[in-house]
Image 1 (cartoon, helix red, strand yellow):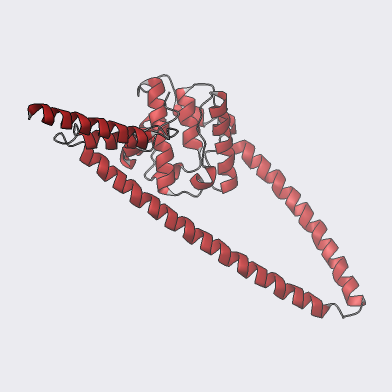
Image 2: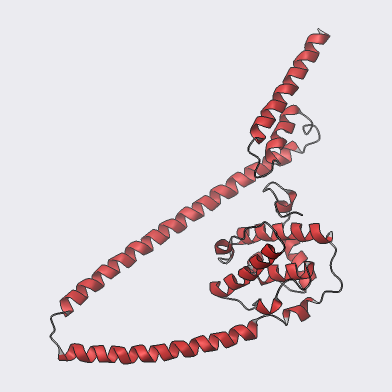
Length: 276
């Protein structure tokens, strides 16, 4: 199975239009952007189509809009992966942000995996619309209503408590007002400091993502160059491919490439000497 796929695998060079077509055709949807699949519901249903009956569709929320609801969908998906012994870690925190590149990479992996299971053939007996009707929207709505009622009750209780405290303050001395103002100023400073830290972290993440995309594009250019017919059999090209297509866990790729290149050079030198 294609549970472990290297970043230079052809799966990651499938375009977003092809991914969207794959999703829309199989699930009878009409997605126009990759980030529309960020909720995790599409991924759950793709696995449901690949392994009918394995995904508890009543737990999948196709109307998930908040990160909390999306995370619940990904929990369902991760449980399915664990049940099927699929060794794939889901970067939930990145996917729920709706970033196109992160979601595209995950969907590229998912397409490759599903195609490796069913040979890319669509399950004609699968009714995606009917299966979606078993989603967990109603259940979540009821849960939300219960939560809302609970929050309203808590708010009423807190309001009553606040009124009591205010009355006590009014009847008591006014010496605490100065310390309260000072405490508020301290909290304000802490909030500003944390906000600044969050902003810096976001800038750092954006920088790292741009750097990642930059080097990924470079690797892709090198791969295209290595695929030119006149160059693909040259020793240097073969050595580069050994590094590009090495498994993620393989640490000796560079040593293997160097050893191959050294042997190739020695062979050429030997042939030249024999001809001389």
